[in-house]
Length: 100
Image (cartoon, rainbow, N blue to C red; front, top):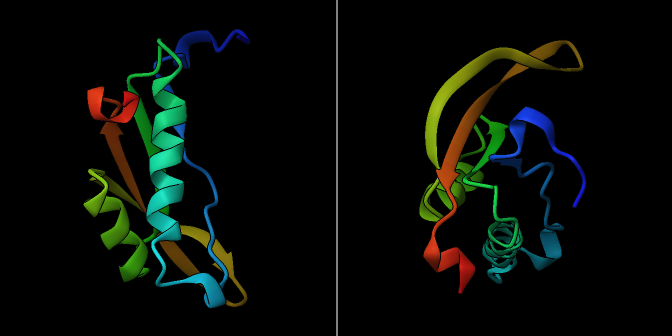
């Protein structure tokens, strides 16, 4: 396993996307659960973090349903054309259910 330095206890879920024609089939939840299982296989990982566009209601609901908890908002996080969007930061622990 590579040396992860002083952040070995944290993993980041980064850029998840399901194409529109495949949405509504539970693939998004399966992807999150697979990522959590993968993280659980790294003994030092205790927490998984992510950011999601604050007004992406379906994604925020998915992550909350998967046990993620919001812990802050980063205003003006990403420039989109002539506007900015805020990012909601979320986290959850890796637990025994993820290891199953």
